[in-house]
Length: 291
Image: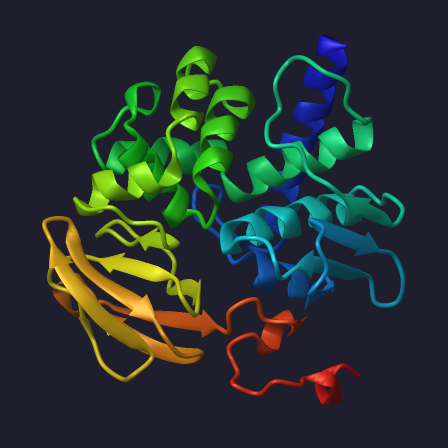
């Protein structure tokens, strides 16, 4: 069984490189999973159903994602469903596992899609670069450091830990099990210096994407010298780690980071239901855009 897993994991890794190369994406950079879906001819829709996600074959093929799940979880689920698409699996409804440990039964197609998603979103070169740029060691990373890297690649805290441990072997598995047990509010408190339960995206000076994707209610920690204009973000406080803002309205705006660098912030409505390309609009009914 271990040999089968290793073979599937190798296949998933190679296909993730293939997909990135075909889409002209670097092998070390974060990616916009919804833009990639569009390039692959996939229609992505958020639905108000309690599930993880669904891949539907057809013309066009579709990905359905639960709007009820956390933002970072939706990103990973979308990549998982892309995996079903590129491996030409049939239509599926997914309840995703949280890790790729060496024990327990697994369906080969699900393992393949799950592992593909990890390598697609968190490529080996990207993870090495993310830690090296910041002067950190993945094997000894703190919870706050792991949340920072997870934010940079649009995934969740637990997701990045599991991929580093079980996908890349960059983090000892015993250490991974310890880190996963740290409650996320405690990790945020370590970053901000105060108790904090709301969703948090950490944008440091090494942020590589041209956009920051959030939804109403998400908090964004920007570098200390960052400035924001417009009324979509509300400044909440300045901390020793940076300037904390809350996304309060849907839309697209700019923030200025260090050295005058401009980054776009795209804010979706909270638990938005509809096609992914319209998630930043204020309208409440996008049915007219479906055709």
